[in-house]
Image (cartoon, rainbow, N blue to C red; front, side, top):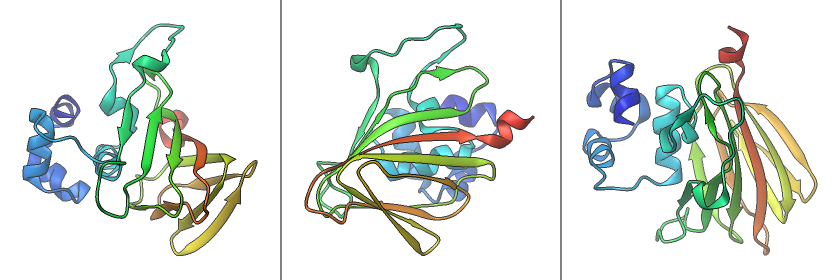
Length: 184
């Protein structure tokens, strides 16, 4: 995070304002004293205009990049005592130089609300496919219910929220792509 913030010539105060995260929290994350939740990590990545995976993993320039399961980064809120406890996200895509793309697997326990994510910068889109259970995605106040086998695409420049309204765990796959980055 510090390297990307410095590359973009942002102070902690500037990043705090952009991300809606306190300066002290950002400083603690950069020092390694605090681990951010999925939501906070997403807010920071969005404020920097990059994917969460770019914050978590080194960039590769290889034509072929294999990311083994044991090397995949996991952001896990299961230990939290608030509404987002029970939300688990595994980043399954390698970070490739010059490519703003992220793929991941999310697990949401029954009846868990994973929180509201702020809009990403213009150009970002999300593709979500549900493998098991039920997933409710709220996009700027409009709820979409997805069952196993259903998929959705949306421009992610809106507030979006994920929750599992059902009694079974939800397993879904998410891909995020910065179309604006690829168009240039």
